[in-house]
Image (tube, rainbow, N blue to C red; front, side):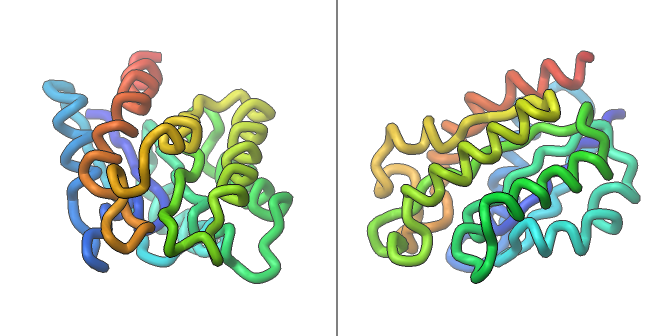
Length: 187
């Protein structure tokens, strides 16, 4: 049985009305069925790549995963003193400790109108481009979620808080992610 770890923030945790849910994990498991996988969600509300590094071994490396889907960035853009270079460096450290060949990176998506002051879409796009640059440098598969998310209105894919994802967002994301995961699991 192959083990997949979903590693990220509250979006990975499937946060709904402020609480983690299994929406993302369940949708991915259904999309990968009937393949037998051990799917572990290690999304933490409010986390960013700095916090991810602090728990990298206990939440990811120590579980000897076959595949890790890394999905950070939405909170990183609003961390004081976080630079694009530091964000990329944090992703690089994750890739090196996990093993780049075991990873898939997902770029951050969008936020809605009420979140533009602290998480502006322009800055999220910069972090998305930095994620892609890191993925290419390390020859890691990635999903450009920002480019897909920006095609949709915030009200279509986000909850009323303009930050966390409605079920529709996970459906759209998984249309892009599942083929990449399936290919990686066959390699």
